[in-house]
Length: 290
Image (cartoon, rainbow, N blue to C red; front, side, top):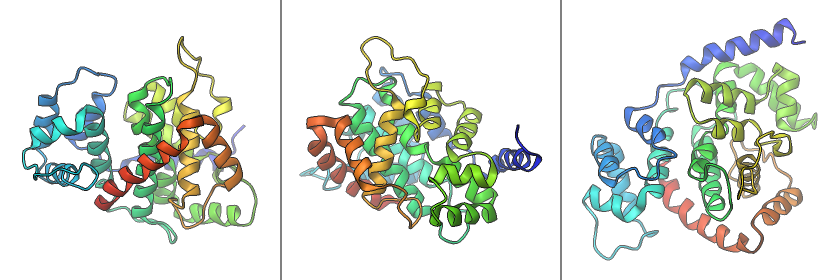
């Protein structure tokens, strides 16, 4: 039975969702296209052309060393064709979401840049892993990675004093990060993230993966025929591996190396070196936008 204080914290967080700025029309339409493999290049091109900053960043990305173009690309429609639907969606989501949080007040030890870099790192890793695994809603892996820690951001922005208490508990060895959150405010950041994703009407598979990304063994999602990996397990490995690489939300790394590497390697098997190499290239190309 939750105490009055715990209930009050949840109410404050629900009210605090209003502090998160609304998605742009472009981002809303890109998110709505998840699950639609037949979305056209022309449709996505038209969306991007309406956002001058986004269009410029997409051209900058396609002309980066990652794509090694001999001649400079200056046409959005051609850039869209070169990137493909999946990579384009990912780039638009990354660049659009990162622009949302710049005006938030956050407590000491918090950096929007670090938050964005961690979110994008987990998103890129999740997407790379998903394309090698029989995962439900494969095309939603990037979005799940990008939005998995929204709860941490909302707690920091809405309950800054409690956020510092959580980190103090964690630093003292009182438990895992989400255990310390539950001690301090009666709810963990994965649950808070889902509150936001429900309000934003994101697909259930993405919400469930985010809810269980720290406890994938508790994920009740049944595996459909031909699927052997839950999105939550994939997200858990990507999140932990990003922390292992030092790409963390806060200065303190929240992962222990040995279990993280074991989980990551066992999930990927023989593909582990290839995925790690591809991640380094993609992350280097996109992190300049944050």
